[in-house]
Picture (cartoon, helix red, strand yellow):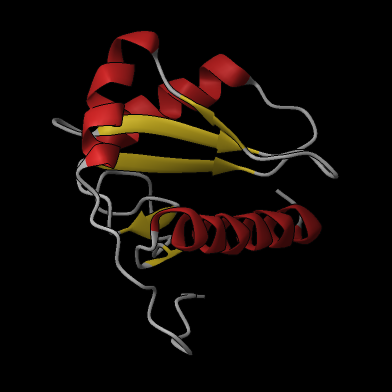
Length: 123
């Protein structure tokens, strides 16, 4: 992966973290990007039980992206792929069978204010 592509991915992760803070009032930041797995999601958000895979690309290979999210999610987490192309809105992609569980987990998120002035990005 080229440096421009990596930088676009990092920007996408920071952008999505900001959107999750705005929409749900939760703490969210880029994850530690050492290796794939449930302990290193693309974005760490204070939404228990979901694994976030971010794809900030013009051409998404949907099923391979979902397979990566499923493999990295581990047991007990709902894998969600977030995707955005240039000049388009973010999309959240989830398997239909996981949708009820995702709705349940999101409904349990408490409405709290994001930490003002806190730098939530991890390089």
